[in-house]
Length: 193
Image (cartoon, rainbow, N blue to C red; front, side, top):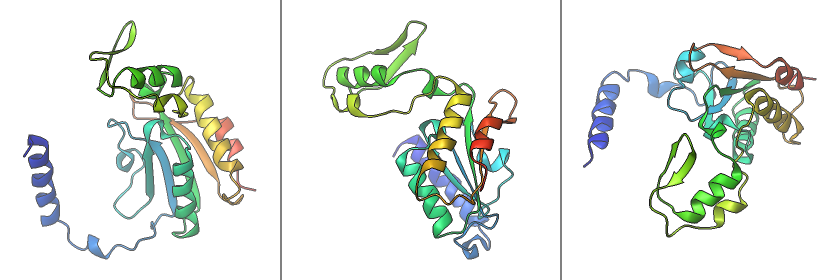
């Protein structure tokens, strides 16, 4: 068994020992909101948004992008579990800013192994055995954070399954300070009608 598995199991045992009445939490989030944010390990939505277990839905993916699956989750969050407000929160220094769809497609064509990056860009250390499937995916990379937040709020708002009465707020989490910085154009685009 790996060291990581042992650490996770140990942490879980400690968590279970202090679980108390958390098993009685209702399924719908008590504060009735959802956050779409990045999977980056430096982001802790529970801390930066003041969440406890049971408070809110947190949907995470690479870049915190409004992919079809993220929108699916938001719609379920509203329709079946009663959320009434949504946040789209991207962040500074995001890995999704470091490559393009073309770079990802080329890296996957070269190899399925983990790539590396340096001052000259992304590289495959062990080419061979790749796939061309990566060339046909929109990886939803990011060139400008404010623009991507606005695009995601607009994409969610434009979806026919999203009710117009749900406000959608746009923010960027600053990885250096922990501050949530509003993207006013995105919040305006997500305004409830």
